[in-house]
Amino acid sequence: MRAVNILHLHSTFSPGGKAARCVRLINAFGATARHTIASSMDGAYGAQSGIASGIDYEIAQNPPPLTGGPSVQRYEAIAAYMRRFDLVLTYDWGAIDGVMAKRVSSKGMPPVVHHEDGFDADEADGLKPQRNLYRRFALTKADALVVPSQTLEGIALKTWKQPRDRVHRIATGVDTALYAKKPDPKAIPGFKRKPGEVVIGTLAGLYAVKDLPMLVRAVGGLSGKVRLVIVGEGPERQTILDTAERM
Image 1 (cartoon, rainbow, N blue to C red):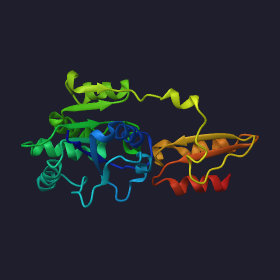
Image 2 (cartoon, helix red, strand yellow):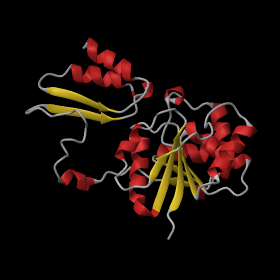
Image 3 (cartoon, helix red, strand yellow):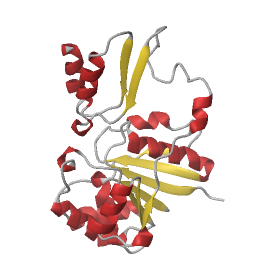
């Protein structure tokens, strides 16, 4: 049987919760699929380090721009690219134009499943009305919409007016079997645990909405042998480092 050819369109494929779930999905497909990954942020592909050896995948070379002002020409270019694949998976606002491309040019298009995992700082205090309208219009051509929480499920149904049978809430699971064995001491490059120390860790995209400097300040106020480990990439990296330097 021929492997399913899947395109993943991301706002960013830097390490974080959304990318980690995508990596687990890619690994779960095993040899039954081959994957092409595109990010709207240039060079933001750090999460690929979690893809298991032997998985057939590639980083998209010169894909059409996934972000920009509304443009039928750009949507048609994205649609033409998407037609090369058997299935397209889009992730968050930064890749919503993949869904809009199917809305504008639907003939011969593969199934498109859109995922919404949360919101960036610009929508943390409330959703933007113009984005709500854009999502409602684009998502009419999505074959499914996947969300991880009841809050996002409610937004999809009530604010974005999506049909009940199109919205699928799939909560982020925890593989408890991983905790039954000792951790790999080399899992985090450059990190070596010292005897007797308490390690506090987080895996997250380094974005302002995460407020990781607050975590740095909180851990900095603890007594004893405590170390904070932050794994991720993003524009707030230097701000986090500066906060740690001031502690």
